[in-house]
Length: 311
Image 1: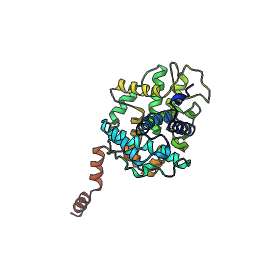
Image 2: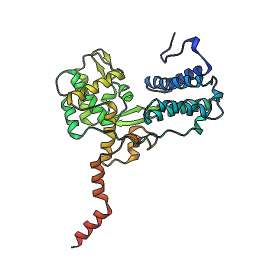
Image 3: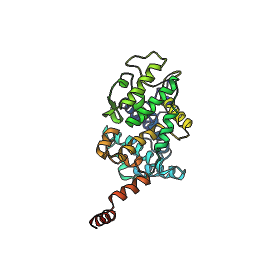
Image 4: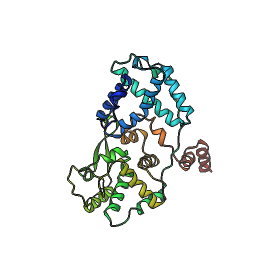
């Protein structure tokens, strides 16, 4: 019988697919999100198929030329540079695991140039749109109270969708939460008084029988899964006329923190990133912010203001 991670039927198994299954199981054991191993398999299975079509049936036979051939094939299919870069990262991670476990002497990806994805500026809700979103959560129904609490927690903490889903009822009663993020790394996030108040109102109105250890976010038919969480956030956005996703709220938290003077190091720690590189992908400041920063810090403006002060 196939497992949770979609193992192949016995007749289809080869050395490469066996190693892929083993790696996906390893990822599943170390990942907090059950969606991560599924995403890795979705990217790696076509790569394994491509290797076998090129006559490669063992991990020792994988060469840089085979990886380049696959990436060129994917590029010819018209995928974006962002998707191509993601494919490379997943392939590199798989082969790196094989190397660390001693199945390969060296990672063949080391000799393959990493596809570069240009910086992509992703919009975030404006202050006016955030007000619309909060108004879209007004109402006495318990789901409206849940939506308001969910929106405020996401904006207040910058948590990933998987991290939001891992919160419990007991967490909602704390000012400081310990969250386990990617790679099992722990970090502290904080809930403002208004956010804790919204959570209390939601939990008081929630019709489900909940205990301290119960998951925090619920819908009509049970605890929310990833698809349910995304749908809930999208529905809030539709009511407000604002395009919205859980990750847009995470970006919003990051950009607003920067606008309000938070330094990159503390922002990195609060968001659970291991380096500053990741921040650059979704923290482009709006042009108005850059224009204001230039106005405040330009040497020309400073000199002119200094000259006016001497008159």
